[in-house]
Amino acid sequence: MKAAMLYSTSLIVGAVLGVTIYKSIEPGKAALHHGVAVPETGLELDEQGKTGAVNPANGREQLSKLYKTLVRFRSIKGGLPKTLDEMYGANLGFTKSDIKSVDAEHADAADTGFVAQSIDGRFLRPRLDGSAKPASPKRGERDVWAVSPIYVRRNVVKHIDRSVALNPQGAMLVLWSDGKIDETPITSMVFMKDPKSTRWIGGFSGEAGMSKETRTWLQMHDQVSLTSR
Image (cartoon, rainbow, N blue to C red; front, side, top):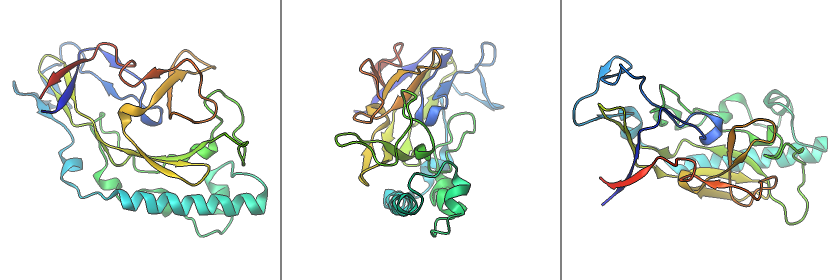
């Protein structure tokens, strides 16, 4: 028996890579999803993603190559690149084609056509608390350098009453500053208030800059009810 999550809110925010996890159909348009009729039994989304053959080993290989590139860049330049172009221009063998997932064509595209095609280079951004992300974290600290969300399947089903069933499977690949690559289910993400706004931002347990006051993935979806599927 699989656990499905049933949504009825008009907007659920707090997603992987800072995008909206799900935006429901507007009132009055419940019978259609991008022009496609929603049947009584529900409309299963993202068939192209489910039928594609994906292999997390591909993502691990890409992240491993990225890590080696960043370490070499750091040893040469004394810091992390500030832009992707700066990294490409260092002639370290990591090109624009390397940042795009080899499994991108099979990415989960259930969110209004959104396709996560590329590795999310979090080494380019500050820590979640807004502080600078150092090239070499202090002892006992770890930073997230990159995330690949290609291997998550949300298994979204839209219903005619505007509710949504979500049965997430698979895991995100998370590259840490120490070179380790974790497979983290989306439901294991943690969220904290963005210090510069009122929105919530997603991160991973143990990363530097994470607030002590956090919410779990399920807490971010406080109108979710668990049902059998």
